[in-house]
Image: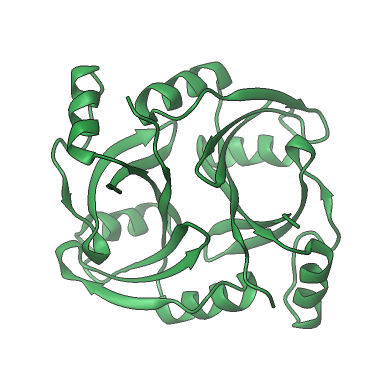
Length: 133
Length: 133
């Protein structure tokens, strides 16, 4: 399996996107966030670039969505880490042929036009792959 | 406040370092981890580089340490995100003069000879700064 090129993005779930954006910018000194709607997942999301990675704040408005259920169960905080891989379809196929079961067996539309596939929990943390070719 | 240069490292707490290292390498395809002891914090830690960032697995052997108590309370998973800043002392001073209370008001020794300062929880996620000058 080819090594991931970079950490593509890290998602944090928040209850109040405007408040979270303001606190992240003020406390962490990160560049201004850009907010987008992502109805496929029932969330508004905000992203800010830090080096080669994206910090993403995810605010569910659909309580039945995956992020919405995560918020209800765990509260605010880390949601997932997504690794950028050169060829997402090939990597998913490699994982399947290695006998590693993943949540997503094909790529799906992530926020911000990214193509992603969820691996699932790895020692307690949600991991994901993003097509970064 | 100057923008962070990069995500310096991301720490995940695990119960069994060898098992976690093996699963991270197999499932995520990351480069082999290097394991170090960090008695100041009561942990063994393993790091693997992904792009410009470090993925760090932290395994507490001291149940009374900060990571040990985190594991007891939350189980395995995300522990903290650390942003690399050009000048750590200056950034800590800037936060203080902006009225932002941080867990660490001076730099301390992190794992792997890094100089770090914990900010504390930001919307549910532990945030930290690493001297990256």
